[in-house]
Length: 290
Image (cartoon, rainbow, N blue to C red; front, side, top):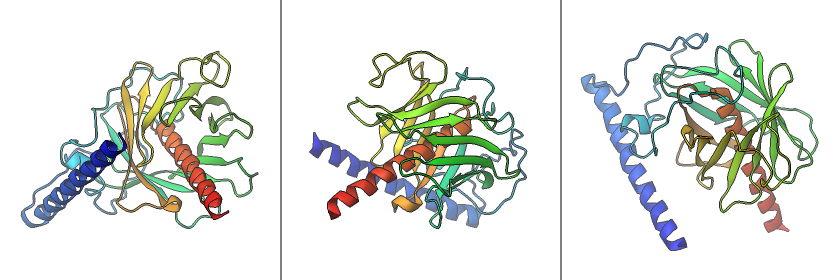
């Protein structure tokens, strides 16, 4: 089984490498013959952000450029969020198709938990939100805050639970109301994260007596490629590591969010997952050095 998994992973990388050059060739054709990969859609009206064209993101959107062949099953519309209202009435939800975001972990950071997030849906990079970690915190007690890039308004707070059977982050609105939490599943055949809503009942740490998670996050966490499924089993968001070379202190992701899904919830969960695996890698290094 291990040999088969390794071979499949190598084959996937070769296919991705091939399509990378296809996208690069198409970008070259655009400059020479006016050929375009973009959909030429007008800027979306869901966000009050001012469009700041900075650079083409066609290489960020490789999967979109080649028709989504490698990105997995198509995202499905989220018909009903498990909470109301969404985190932000202006930024959270869009009813005009799939949105794409780029998450960039800052290489120079006092907290090690800082991310800059931009929307790249229309092949134009627009600042969306930023995530900053707490300057002072207890070991194992991380806190991150997500704020609007335009107004600086706090939108989501991700507060790591100090005492828990499995890594968990509580999720709070800007007014301090706890909306739910994300936790790593304690008993599972593969790495899995569940998102639970506050006040849905249940108890226990093994999952036997807990309510059904509002969202289940699973996939290939080794390569940081995973998807979000709602209670109905629909894939409503997807995250892929963006780039060929990645190191823990500056990981980059491309995130796709389905129509009707709260983008801020998805982005907050991706940041929490990234921090959890970074800490696990650090612990393994320490053990190897001892």
